[in-house]
Picture 1 (cartoon, helix red, strand yellow):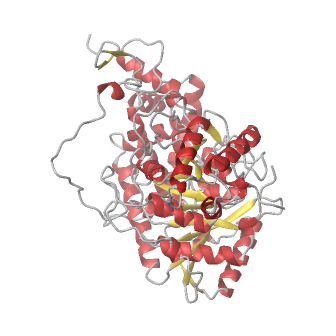
Picture 2 (tube, chains in turn yellow, purple):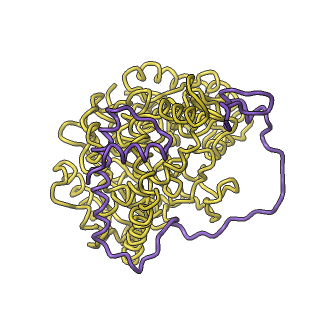
Picture 3 (spheres, one colour):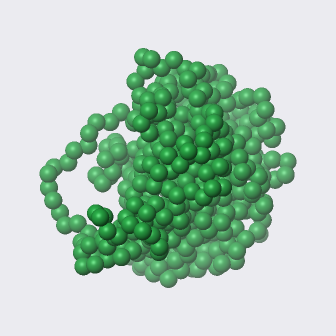
Length: 487
Length: 95
């Protein structure tokens, strides 16, 4: 069956654009038509920008005709609605910002734009990036393209669903406790969380500033390497971005992983892991053995404390970051109030959803007088122990292999009334954010009822090349990434 | 761990949030469960451990003391719920 334009990866579309088989305007029109046809079911998009997209595409076609095109020129992308886009409504999935038009753009988007990428629109997400299911969005949940009764994952649910539904060639998301990797796993695509500081956070609406990172969601590992190379690098506007050279990530995809030392942390391969996940992991280990990798049993002894640590640090940082939403300078302002404090209180109470309020409350409690040392500082100390676990483990291995989520995607509504249960399902992704290092999720199989299961490769800080290489080798030895959701 | 409605009201005041009676009761239960869960961190002895506020080793990122034009008043106030000249207009602050 001939491939549709919307089925093409970045690198495949690039070839067709260069050979003039397809123009960027044609490709963009194909994606916009695909979005119109499928989004009523999937609901990945909060804002579609057809006029701007076609203007971008026309400019890209001129650039291609002049022989000045780069890898991303003319490629139709979409961004999680957490990325500020100048002049284009940015909501972060919240009523609080339902009418917010940013006066500037995120650096990561600016970089993609400079390279001639086309913006299709802004993607649905859990409100203020708080969630693992996309259910807390004020616009309602996105749906998993593999089974629309199921969650796509979160908080970058729209970003993952859009890639899996072939509504965008690739997307950007953010990851604070797993919010790129978990939806990538649930939707059967590739998702990478770079090392903290690898990609600028300027213009990304902040949730937890010591944990947030920007990363790509793509159809395959090559695309992931392309996107990472395009957005990585020091940004003087983000003082937490690290000034270290950006390697050629695509060149790292040699396909050779003989002698690669892969660590298997016993704390991640527990009793009670979903049998389909267990099976996929066992098969993955077999595949890696056949590719010549060596396995080392390791321990990350403080894994069990990671969720508790995260839900103190992230909520505390969120309570501080979200203090700016007070109805004074932008966003929702309550129409009826008595006095300044009441205006702020009502604006916040009307603008924020339940999950956001819950996390602000927990964070405020943890930072309040009398509790600060017992909760927040204690969590930061345990963070040191978790970080040390990884430093020690990486002395003996090159990458670490784990599941991404304890189960495949659950049904919409299934966990919404038990927040603690929801939080506990982030157990495999959270430690990576606490340690500040990098990790990639990629397709590794399917459950008995057809839902994707991903595997995670964790790398050393600034070791994205090793995990990309290990990911691509696995991808080339399997066929999971070629399966497509029927829509 | 049990949180009372009064505890919830105190935290809500600090966070400038106004909660309905149902929400207060819901949060008393849920916050209690979550805060009870995180107490497991006390199983660990961290007496000699320094807190990590930043996973990647970094020092202060300074730049040269130079100025350049900012985005300007009109752009800055474009999202203002209520604007008067170059000011954000809010309810009276001082009685």
